[in-house]
Image 1 (cartoon, rainbow, N blue to C red):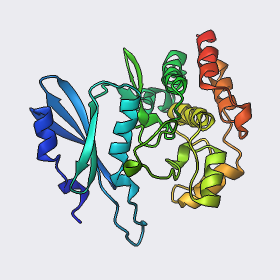
Image 2: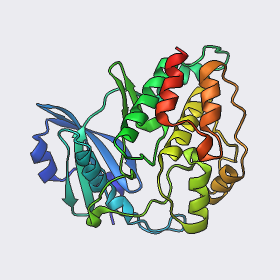
Image 3: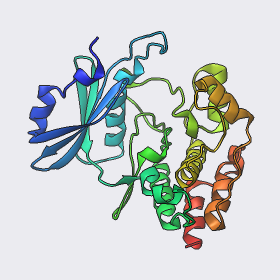
Amino acid sequence: MAEAASYEIPTSVLETLVASGRRLVLDRRGSTVWEVETQQGRYAVKLGYPIKATSEWEAQEWTALAPAREGAILQQLDRANVSYGEWEHGTWNIQPWHQGDSLYDLWHPHRAEGVSSEPDPGEALSCAEAVAALHATGWAHGDVQPAHLIISPEGTALIDLALAHGGDIPAAYDFSYRGCLVHYESPEISRSVLHTGTATPTMEADVYALGASLFISATGLRHVAYPNDASRRDQRRAIVDGPHRPVTMPGVLGKLIEAMLSPDPADRPTSAEACKELSSGR
């Protein structure tokens, strides 16, 4: 199979968009993401393909299905201008482009050496509102992380819903949830993946992931300490065994993150409660 960088957007997809320009945004194992210019505006085009087995990686077929799975979810959520389909190596989707800065990038100044400014609770509130809005529809995201919280003056967009859980998925594009980026997994998700290989995304786990996202974006540190070269299994063991690093941020944001990172899902605030706490602290 060719390397990911050789995968151009299929001609049929470009013709559907009547594209006037395109830019490769992300090129990783199992997917490529493009920003595409059209007369109607900018779109994101995602291509998925299977990962071949190597000495370092197990074969993964689900990556080929992820764009279509996300497209089906976005349509169920009544998102406008979303389409998806199949191509030679897997599936694709088209969705409107979300302009803005990721949470991690936006809070970079607060992580600079010698800087004492605290993150804006209003920006944290905007992220919590995006998660709460999804939860209000009955869906759990399953992959909340700073890169998936795109903040602009118009609000925050919660992107990358390919792993979401909460409705009917076309059987041809569905696959088991095997966890997400481990830095943001809750203890119960990590424990389930360690024991069974799979888990079920939940709103409680999303809240934990949001807390971990706020923590790393403000401090530059993972909420649980483990070596940079630790295997995913060892990373998950560290999250299960805990504890998380001390939350030293003052005020309502620090108090809220501490609660969101509770090892017991029942002790965490809901995303709606997190919004209420942040609103009262502004």
